[in-house]
Length: 502
Ligand code: HEM
Image (cartoon, rainbow, N blue to C red; front, side, top):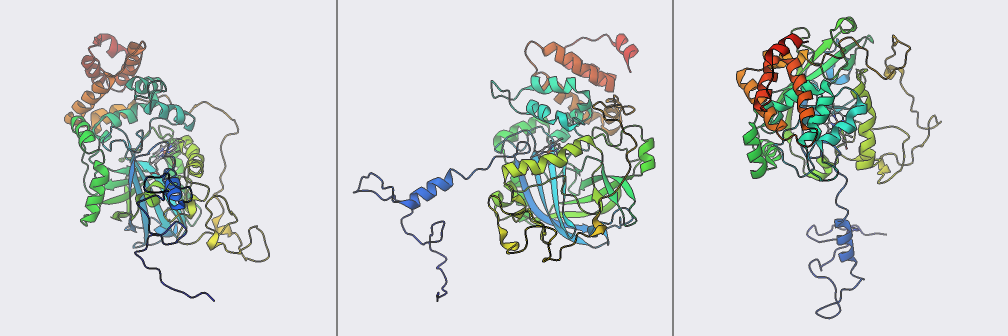
């Protein structure tokens, strides 16, 4: 019989739990060595050390995370049958990760970049992830362009340097990026940490209610801390002084009990409204105006716990737009459809095929399926349960209430090209952003930041890239184009422009 005993918690042990003493000194022959191969503690420590890193996220590598609570404050059960939203007062535990996009894991938190706003809600229907940004739109509207786009935000293959030329070349050749580029070049591109920014699901999603009716939905998280941004010069300065500014700001706020909060709103669009919408409602480069689709309040999210271990919880967190639940689903948005594939795929590579078994990713309400084994499987929860379905033993019966939403598609032609009405209108919304949403100070800074960035364009294609991008600014707003052209010392004949305005 084995005698049970308590280990002295101060003992130092090997990975297999055996207490040992010699941590600082390798075992040698005589006082000067050589070192003996039999010192397996030395081997174990060196071997574990060189395996400490997993691949960083291919995008959004630098980030911060926190646990918190989401509470429903308003009834939206007319739109969704998700259990979380069935009653006012319901709440669930959640995890949030904020990030920059283009930089590596050690890059500066104040870089001009969109900020990732990824949320995981641990609900009774399963884990629901909303993997958004701090901007309501995106640079492109087709997943096929994503790898090329991201390459332009990373490093030049030869020099390993970031390149304004590469970025503006891509943006100027893909004018659907203009809306997001203008938000990025405004002060919203350099938020004051993560607490002072809004979050958006960005894409159009769908909600399905108990009567099996579907509406289209956009998600907005509005910061209760108020919007606060850095100016370009401040952001650059802090990048040098404290590259981990946002991480520190989030940790310190939570440690002092100043829990950051956001209010969740949705915008709702019916099928009829979608059919009559001026733009493709599934185009992530467009917003839905709040006057037409008012914000409907839903609930509050509060972040109140910094995880005990950054690597275990934040680095290994696996968010995916495909983590959807009964009553909340996707839309035909082409970007979102690509993302439904890409995230779980990335995580099988980055974290491993059993990433969902890790604490931060695990559904606390249980998982029942027949996926088994694989690297690092923790099969304790399956034990000796059958590993196939159907079977005569475990009583698992898929419930028809979870049948996917069935719908007709109004076309039978297969195509690659966009032919939605107004698909080429990349300019109306950026123009309104400039004239209506921004005040004079915002416009001045936007122009300043764009000029600053475009001055970095170089090489033999410099003039071609600048001219092509200037045309996009002019088409959004003539004053905007004139001011940027002036700042870049390019003379424009204003008469020609007013005739040529589209
Ligand atoms: C088709 C276009 C896109 C593709 C293929 C894509 C792909 C990826 C991949 C592979 C990752 C790393 C996942 C991981 O290793 O865990 C990632 C991270 C992320 N993406 Fe995207 N992405 C796309 C567009 C977007 C858009 C439009 C948004 C926001 C509206 C977004 C927000 C994020 C966020 C917030 C993260 C970080 C998640 C975290 O904190 O772990 N992405 N993306």
